[in-house]
Length: 295
Figure (tube, one colour):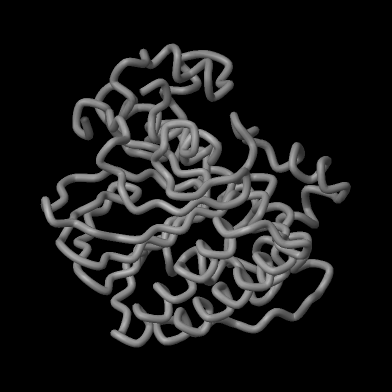
């Protein structure tokens, strides 16, 4: 197998090339078996994943926290999380829908509600216990969309798939509100700016660490960007940038084949000394010590 799972979840076409997905294009993939994917350690997910457990049990680590998955549990992975599979039972069966980051942006539902509320909740609680009716509904959407994608081509196939996925995402949003109260969108200019900042921040690699960089890309002042972030999330732009950068640091430090110097260069730090101080400030210890404790 010439691709690892991380590349597959970043470029959905990789799933199709190795016959991992039952259907796959550049926007969407359907997966029912991950046993044939080469797995070598933590992976950084760059797609939106919705995984429904139908049978068996599994345990996964998401951003360093362990979660158990049982039948009717729905695992939600949003872009930029670090995923590790710990163990899965031999009778494990599931259905997984993968949506690319770009495709998610194109779907108009993403403009509905404050994205930060949903992101924070799903980071803390990525596994949702569905009712039998909700699990059946997920499978119905899965089967219908899959059938339309693999059936005979239709003149309005793209529009049909977009509409079905929007219905699926609206249904998911309503299900999510059973677990958390999401503030309705106010459709203000500052809210739109915050969304654009989050998109830019999560998609950047390596991530610049100055507010001025993102403000310049968004054609606003650093002060205004920080006020927008504070209003939308309760955090300054600098705090959010560090939050994302630290996640990249943790992920790369778990890649045992990479030296700390290589990681320093990959994340665009000026030197090892600066990198060491940054890691100690945000993780409480040196990069070497953190790696030893977390491998």
